[in-house]
Structure formats: C-alpha cells, structure tokens
Image (cartoon, rainbow, N blue to C red; front, side, top):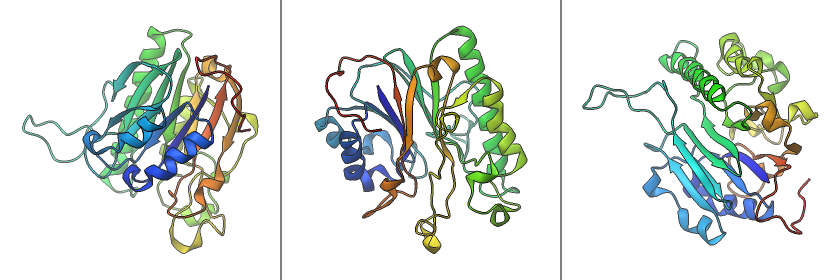
Amino acid sequence: MRIATWNVNSIRTRVGRVVDFITRADIDVLAIQETKCKPEQFPYEPFERAGYEVIARGLNQWNGVAIASRLPIDETTEGFGGMPGWGKPGADGELPREGRALAAQIEGVTIWSLYVPNGRELTDPHYEYKLEWLAALREHIQQWRAAHPGAPLTLMGDFNIAPLDIDVWDMAAFEGRTHVSAPERAAFNAFLEDGFVDALRSRGVEGYTYWDYQQLRFPKNEGMRIDFILGTPEFDELVTAGEIVRTERKGDGPSDHVPVVVELDVETELDDDRPMIF
C-alpha cells in the first residue's frame, strides 16, 4: 500500500497536478493539507474519475484537510478530543474548530491528515494556539493507543515545525522565529518520546519538503523540512521504503510543499503488477 502526504496550498488551484501525481506515482492514499476550501467546494470529480474517494474537512479559505483513497475507507474521524478552537466565537460562545485534523482507517491502518497551526510569531496568540493544539493532539492519540493496543497508526502532514537544525537551510535566518523554537521542537519530540518513528529519517531519507516562493528559495535549495510521516512502532514495521518527491516543486504552478511518500507491506485488493516508484 502506497500512502503519501502533501500540503497542496489550494486544492482547487492544483487539482490537476495532484491527481496527475497520485495516478502517476501509484498512490493508494493521499493525506492532503491546506485545501483552502469548505467540503462543498472541494473538486471531487477529478479524483472520482481517477478512482479515488475523498473525505474533506474545512471551514474557510485558510486551512482544510482531506484524504483521498482508492481503497475502502472503513472509519473516519473529524478533529480530536480536546482540540482547541480559533477565531471569533460562534452563537454558542465556542471558538470554531478549524479544518486541521482528519482521520481514516484504511486496510487496518489509521491515517491522520494533519495541518498543524503555523504559529505566526513567537509573541502572537496563534503561537500559543499551536502549542495547545499539539498538546491536545498528543493526549488524544495517547488515549486512542491505550484503547487500541497494537493498532498501526500514522500522523501525516504539515507539522509547521523543523525539529532539527539540519531541517532549515540556515539557523541564523530563523533566530527568534517560529518553527524552530524550543517549545515547538519539544512538542514535536514528545511524539517521538511516545514511541512514534519518523518513517523517512529513520531510514536515512533526508531533504527539505518546503521552499518559499519568494527570493528564489527553491533554486537556491533554501528550504525547510516540516512535512512528516510519523508512525507507531506497529506502523513502522510495515514501512518498506520512503521518498521525498522533490521534483513536484518544479514545473508550472507548484505548491510550495512536496509530497512525502511511504510504501507499506500491506496486501490490498489492488495488488497486482503495478510499477514500483522507489
């Protein structure tokens, strides 16, 4: 089973590129972030023509997550327990819960598509929101794992955190900024402390996953590694290969992120003589 995560930076703008990639790369399940649309605005038809079912979550043009699968989706979960809200309170006085977390169980594997809040600036309230959001996610996943011992689960998506110095092109350029602060890195490492494994880094796959559009960041390879596939030990046992698909940052109208892909040793109803991508 081939699964991938990709912050597409507007699915309506890049639906052609996304569908082309998942069919060309033989992806069974794609976790999508930053769709920038409500579920009723999602361009389902091109995915359906390619044989994919899509579930989507989003409140406005600033966030949104989705999962596209050509394998049967058995269960879905929108958001998670304790997930904090952001924005203006609704009529009930509650803050709206943004479209940043969506899960599906596929072939016995629970797959989360996550779009972690950016944080903006260290002094911005969005930074505290980011840390609270990650803490709530961790607690929810701890409870889920306790209730489902031995079940494979992966947290996939844009974490908006560069956990190591090598994950940014120049640490000096990030002094006093988000994505590399000690509390953010501690929040990321907390998942590793809980037993999650970075499916690519643990296999020696390095490289950036994001390059800003400005200042020729991509041609200069001034990027960041902020998109990850973290898995429980049970999930990691299934992983046979992984790749950061850097070439998807090239061409016309690319996202500023690229897909991160892993292959799992899981038999599916689609197993046949499909080409390998690694």
